[in-house]
Structure formats: C-alpha cells, structure tokens
Length: 331
Image 1 (cartoon, rainbow, N blue to C red):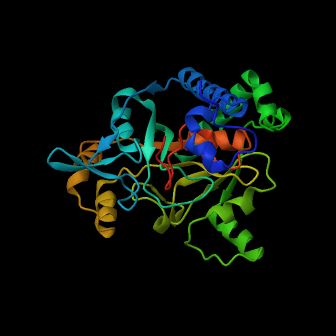
Image 2 (image 1 turned 30 degrees about the horizontal axis):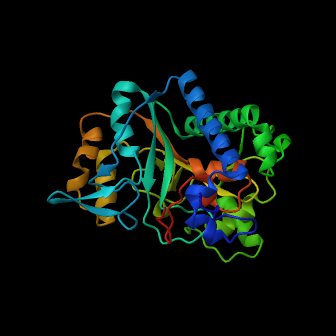
Image 3 (image 1 turned 90 degrees about the horizontal axis):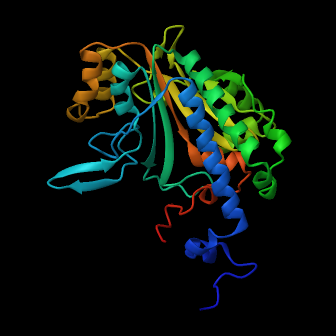
C-alpha cells in the first residue's frame, strides 16, 4: 500500500486536489453528517406542512434569473442549458398539488471567486399556491428554524468539533427581523457606504448589515429594477416588488431569495420584452397565466450557504464533498 498523500499542515490546494481522500477527515465527516441532518430537518418540516416533493428537469431551454450566467450545451441539434432554478417548473405544479418543493443541483456560470459562490450547488426550492409574500416569509423562517434545530438535536458533538457553539443555534427561532430595502440603504449610507437607491446588496453590505445579528434578517421590497421579471409589484409602493432576501447572521450573507409571483400576463410579457428576452422559450411559462392563475409565492434556498453559516465555515467549498468553482472541476 502506498503512503497516504495527506499529512499534517498541507496546503489548501493539495487538500482540494486530493478531495477524494480528504473527505475521510474528522472535519469533513462531521460536515457531511450535519448537512444530512439539516436536509432531514427540512424534509420532516415539509412533510408536516403538506408539501409534495417533485422532480423538475435539470436540462432546460429557458433561464429563470436571466441569460448571463447560464451553462450552455448542445442538446442533440438544439441549444439547451443547465438549470439555474426549478422555480418555473414548480409554478406549473402548484395548480394540481398546491404546495410543492424540490431538491436539485443548480448551476451558475458566474466568474465569482468568493467564499460564498459555487458553480454547482444544491438548491431547495418551494412554491406555494394562495400564499402572499408575508406568508412566504413565515414559511421560510419556520423551515430554516426546523433545519437548524434538527442539526442541533442530532449533531451537537459534530457542531462543537467544527467550532460552532450549540447554544447560539438554540436561539434560531422565528420570528426573524424584517427590514425594508430603503431602511437598509439609509443605514448603510449613514455608515459611510457609497451605495445609491436601486443598487443591489453585495457581500460587503450584507456582511455589515448582519455582523452583529444572532438571527437571520429579511430584507424586503427591493426596487423592481434590480430584481427578476417574475416578481409581483407592491401596490402600496409602486417602485418596489413583493420580495424578500433572507440574510444569515454573523455576516454570512444571503441564504434565501423569494417573492410573490406576478400573475398578470401583460406585465410579464412587457418585462420580458423590456429586458430584450425572446418570448419563444417562455411561452409555456406564460401559459400558466394565460389559462388562469392563482396568487402564489416561492423561494430558493442555497443548501451549502445554510451549512456554511451553521457550521461556521470560512469557505462554502467545504460545505460540499466535491466542490465545483470557477477554478476547479477535479476530482
């Protein structure tokens, strides 16, 4: 038998090159067990609350978040893409199943070399008929709390090994704080940030906003211009949409993006056209409004981002056994 290639005090690059062996370590073993409990907690809560798990496709002809960060591939004689989100397929399923969810890999071709980005990650997504944005946030905070409490219940020793004080996680119970985007911008500007109204929040802004928080924080009512075309206008604030990003505490950043969905066919078509997005690939999605719709909401949760926060990880790549980043697709 050859000498084991990993010894004490190895470089991060060597550990990543030998990830297939490094996952035998105590830390990686603990992480995988915590992650499994987090997902188990999610499924238990979803079953109790009458969500049906469904299996949407990974190959698609349309983009959910826009076309800039898509992985394109040849699908026989046509072009197709790796899915960024199952959202639109889940929306199609609410009419028969009411409340649905899926757990699938999602792919983002973002050239982001940060501690919180993966090009392939696991995406827990929900869509709920007859739920508005306020109800959507209640579902999110109860689901996240259930995930954290399950990990705490089953994996307390593993969390301690990873440097997380279990006592801190015991406090992760709803309700979570809600801040409007305009409040956040005013607060950041008062702290010296040069950020104007209409700009999306970046990692630095999110870190500043939540650095001293112990519970996740919702940021609601973003300007329409910096959010996706399918989000519903807020009738009480015409420049904003009925949406919410959930930011993890301690500066870990966004873990959920969600919104109430626009049901007006004319508004959806106008927004697609305004963004120069060809309508052909979205005709089936527009049919979900054309042939009758209901008020509904949904969200997507980045599983590895939850794990990173719960386990106090410096880098998100440690939240998945075989990370895929801009610089790495091996092993």
